[in-house]
Image (cartoon, rainbow, N blue to C red; front, side, top):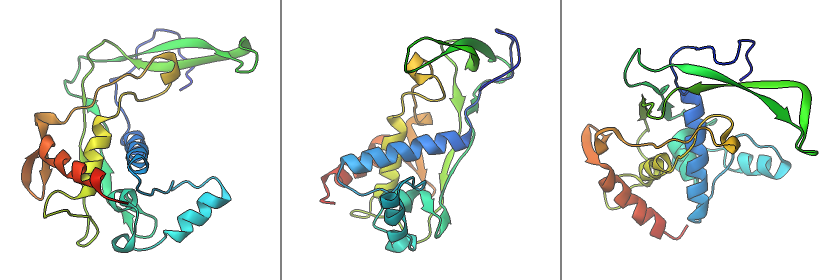
Length: 210
């Protein structure tokens, strides 16, 4: 972010927008799905081949071959995954500060004149943020193995736990984080399940021939 404020001035409490979290989650889900041989389509097609791939899979979720689309929803049928903002677990104890740095020319490796960038950072080493991820899917959309937790939800939890950085300036060493599931439990259809139980479906997902 860019600000006109002076370096070091304090802002409000830290938070991570739900839209950013959702984007990172989708990216991680796509990486895991592709690594395991399943298909995935970037919803923001930037090339002609990606656009053709997107149109090819423009269909009801119940007929889609794409696990990530069935999990998150699609332009055809709407959103199925809803991610809240991640907010401080304890109010009034955490703030953000501003750090200003020069911009570098990536070609020459030298400082760009008259270019300053300011990043808003969470203060302290143990900032704890909390949020909720909710999924609502119509019948017949999700892939269930042996009446267990759907593959899509197992993929979501695995992707969530694999996130290790958020925000900007990650190349400069900022944004390191650790994601955990509160209480080590996931609510599914009103039933509390341990993370290990959910991930056991992910093991079956990994063994499938996609």
